[in-house]
Image 1: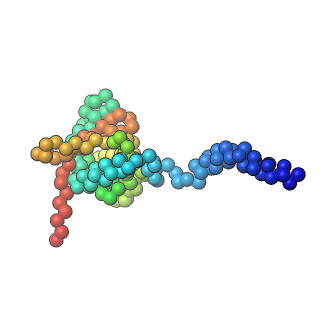
Image 2: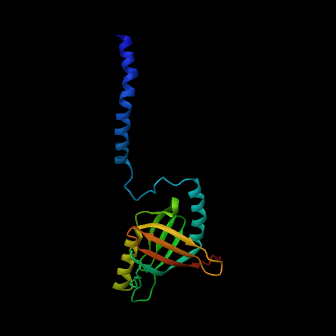
Image 3: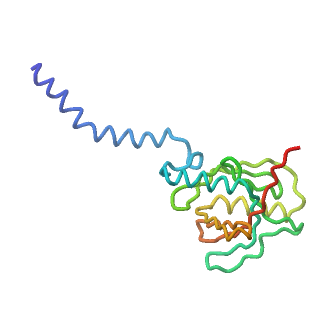
Length: 185
């Protein structure tokens, strides 16, 4: 009997291993953080190195919206406010921000094949300069939550860099880089 219980002890773990792995794997999802708090873990070494280079370039500029296109490539001219403030994005230390009305930021991570992950927005509640600006701020935040891919273009050095952002609905933004002055007083 002792030998049969020993063989059961050796066989039982092998039989239960797939079940335990299956159940444990599904239970891990229950204990994990809600989606949007952490980037997917699919970035390889090349993507991380490229991402650091691209992140440094993104951090060195303000990014002004030049053109917004819908999924069919038709220009959308309603991305300005009555106050004349234009959409400007800021990248800094893994944060993507916009401050048309109140400061809003997202954590972000650059992934493989020019994909970008954007976290849950965090906003500072502040008064705005009118309904138009508040509506635009709200639209910008909604649009950025659907950010899916990017392309950074550096022309022959004479032009400022360009940043193309592609959203899950296939719409696109084209932004122009404006150098950030890093002078200390």
